[in-house]
Length: 287
Image 1 (tube, rainbow, N blue to C red):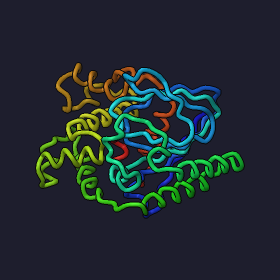
Image 2: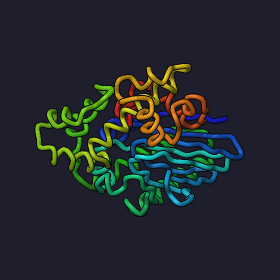
Image 3: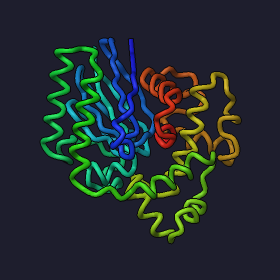
């Protein structure tokens, strides 16, 4: 009833886009909670969608093309189907190169993509929508359209964030408990500069990024290893059980036990498929 398929972007876009994913759901209604994730662009191509962020006052219709900034809190989705959307994971250096705005301006925000990049977003969505209606199931045309869209954005400005993204990637993926001092040492610049770079490309401070990485690493283990004890998922990254539960709920919206028990359809598909897809950057699996 729910099918999610991942695709690798064109080679010249892989520094900016982690992956494309096409999700189809053949259900009259879908309700899901999605943990805090990296930034993404989503083109809604069928069905209707309402989005709510934790601690926000209400729900907002999110049809068409939208930019989802880096998130520090979970997101709730309600959809009427059958539906389809194409998503693109935006890597940190892609924020500046493709969108032309610092990532921290969009943290925990969802905005119409056209408001950020102009009418080119509406035109790309129109092409995808037309092909979806005429050729249901033809993912290749959607991916080709996405490649052309992002390639056009990439010609607008210089890309400068690849070096910091590479260092931060190694920092996050290399330890279950990333220490900010280690990131500062790897960058060989001042703590203030690292703070600025992290907010510019990741949308949050290094401390917040480390907290988020610790929780999402544990979430991956809980989701992919049925029956795993919380102590094994937490490892030595948290002070005690209450600290683990508090941090886990802040980024996923659920306690570890509830997260392990609850079958969230989109998250289940997303996490398992990404973990199996070796060409997707490690950074996208932890952020």
